Image: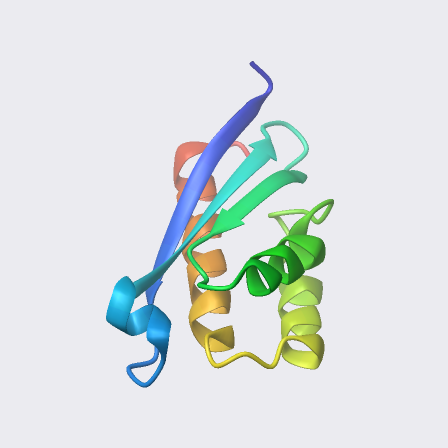
Length: 103
């Protein structure tokens, strides 16, 4: 198998529905092991539109370089969970580098 699954977690802000339901935002990424390209995404954001928008930003990006992805979220995603989503993505990146040390 040429792909791996990694996940990341971060606390939702306390004043939003996601916090009431889940407490944490979870992000799951399927990544091409050798290249680091993100080929599938899911997350625990409440609305379908938020999940799809986050996936649109992340699909085809590379886990090795999150700076452009973070900039994309900061410039285009204005949901209350933006900071938690970025933190969960960085958590997933850390998990990736811990499991795939050669990268």
